[in-house]
Structures are given as structure tokens and as C-alpha cells.
Length: 155
Image 1 (cartoon, one colour):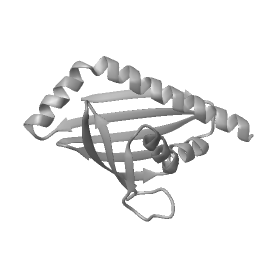
Image 2 (spheres, helix red, strand yellow):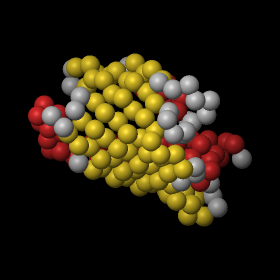
Image 3 (cartoon, one colour):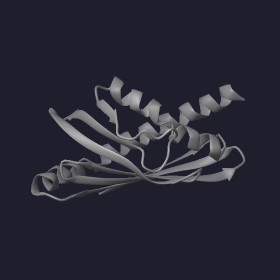
Image 4 (spheres, one colour):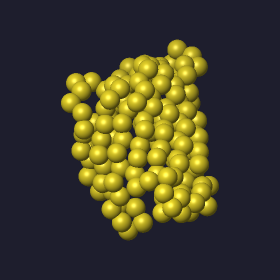
């Protein structure tokens, strides 16, 4: 299953990449939503090898997720590999400079299942694909608006 979003942001590509790789902010957001987030690495700056162990509730059950940055090409590409209960995911975040102060953000999330239980869960997610895509698009649009606001305040 694949979910793709695209959003144009009124900010330079370097600024947007800095916001995309502000992992501490994303960690705090997840914790505010009730997730338990533990950092697995001791890297001084965001980069390849950054990783997390996350516990969150989904459909009434605690789920465990392991995530790791496996590709980090500043300022245009970030790849995050995830694994949770037999469902493996890859999220690619690509940034394309459209102009000096305009950047296109594209996210591509691909999910695959390895076990029977995971395949059943993934099948139910496929049935809700439209809803998931709308929610993901809304989150990316909200992120884009926040980045634009931060850039406007900065300069």
C-alpha cells in the first residue's frame, strides 16, 4: 500500500529541510499525543542512523514501532524505515526547490506485511485508504503552513 502527498511551501529548500529534520519537535508532538518515544542513537545532529523505539495505542492496543533514518541527503532527501508487528514501512521525504523561496515537499509512504495478522491489518488499512490519504494530506498541509509561518517570522 502506498500513500503519496505533495505540498508547495513558501520557504527555501534548506529551511524546509531543517524543519523536516527537526526530530526533537516530532518526538515532542508524538509524546503529546500519548506515545512513548525513546531515542536509540546518540548522534549530535540529525542524520543517517538516527533511530527511535515508539510505543503507541492503535485500535485499542499498544503497538511497538522501530524507526530508523536510512538515507539522509541534505537538503533534498530523507528516508525513514519502520517496522511494527509484521508491518514494514518506508517513508521517503523529497524536497524540490521550485524557486529561491519555494519548495515542493513530497512524501511517499509504502507499507508491506510479513505475517498473516499483519496482512489482515494492512488489508483493513487498504479499505480505509481514502481516509488515511486525506488525514496524511491534512497533516502535511498543516506542517507546510507551520513551516511557512516560522519562515515568515524569521525573516
